[in-house]
Image (cartoon, rainbow, N blue to C red; front, side, top):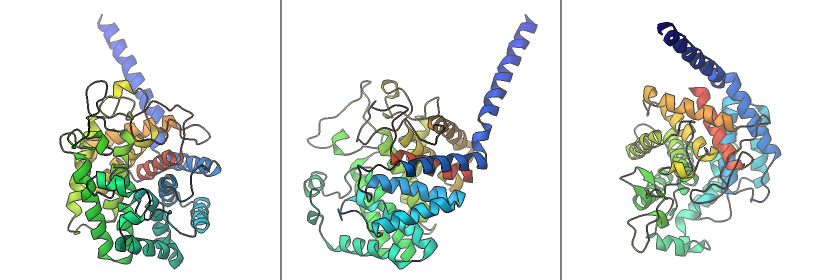
Length: 374
């Protein structure tokens, strides 16, 4: 009997060692760079022409592409970034007061920091100055939604990835305090409107809140509140990008740090055994199968948190390692990142291994760029 037990223990140990060896290569710098390059090249060859080139979807993708360029120093990726800016004439989207149309200029500012070409940043500075001097009612289609949200300009949580990092990048780059102050004001409005202090997660918008006047509470099948994975992924990614810019002595930095750490701790507890997160954070059993975009943003933000010293390495490193293994399992041999939930605003099951989108690739690239730094 003793020999049988020892034999079984030996088999378990061998399986454990084999499993570790099977994934060890995923954390080697060479392997990560290879995966980033394959994902970036596949996406560049398969642009989503149904979206405007200044769309938020490209904002997320090119944020990831720039991170991949920084990690790999690939001339090919640099040329793609420059070509994108030239094609857009370094302009933001058409809707001045809509946060989504401010996402792509984050990459313009990053490129300006490398090249120093005024054309890369001047159009966006002009746009933000106009933004600050005009009323949101001058941007078609926004007024009613903003008024329903008690005047909150960024009334959906995704917006925290789109506009605030662009404002902070602009303020830091030009040494202009007014852009940082604007970020603080807009972010805190959204925080006060959508942050759930019990769950430490963001509602996607007021229609998913349980305590907003005139809103009928929505529930998952298990009775829990509805918290969308990618929505909170946008928030975590946005916070990481803001904190990366703000100096340690910035007066309002601690607000962002506290919010980041609270959400990180909650997200850590919601990771599933495969290392990924489900589209519904509090009802994972109803949404089987990991999703790439939300999981990618979590992996990125948590890895950045470790790298920056904000999150405890011993506590979060196992979470991030599992997340990266899970994300790599979603990438196909040709570089395509599958299992991306299509554009939406709440949990869905409408995706598969063949479902892809440029913002999902962007999340994967951001995650990989931080994994290299680990």
